[in-house]
Image 1 (cartoon, rainbow, N blue to C red):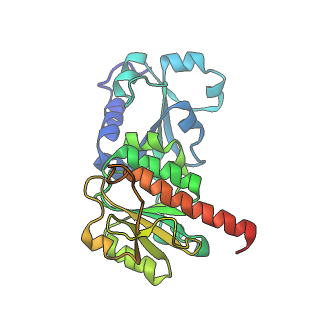
Image 2: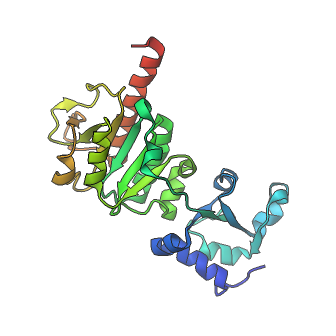
Image 3: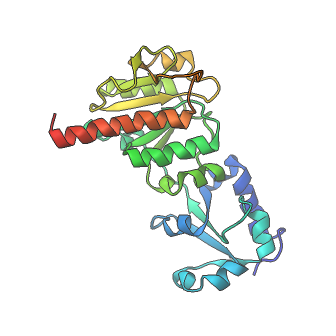
Length: 262
């Protein structure tokens, strides 16, 4: 049993929790909790740690697992949550090529510029999976997808939603357009309401930074500006909420098309 936070493995766990650079260098990210552990795809799991209490209370669950036991106090010290569930896994980071996010006529993408809130990013992946998106594209100044807070917010969607981090967002958007994908910018200058365009064709939605929205350079890449109408004194919605409305409107149109054939 590991009983000290000075243990080299515990020091590395703490580093992986806090530093994107360490996660990138080791090709590893951390998930916590029984549900997230259960859903790890085959071949992705590197190592499992459990607290002493978790081991005693979940012997049936752990019967087919290889794991290392950590004292409760040390586990609480290294966990990123205030009330740890008692199981923590090191998982291999998946990698995707842009082409894997493009699925012909069914392409449905979220394109993110400089999203900063880990919870927002995780929520976008989770709701994106629910809405049936084919993937998420983000620039390098978007918060790290493997930040522990982002991972928790995905509720397991990190295992199933393909993603691509681009060094040149403008060039990537132009590449999408050259392949017949219609790119829409959620923008305050939009005159077309978000539920008016036809999203049954290959579609990508651009969502900008929580405070500043899309930069002019990126917004100008869009085929069309769209707006989400506001009542009262509200000027804009949370980035994740805006993305959800757009993704589910696309989902609604495509479901109706599948039923009616029109």
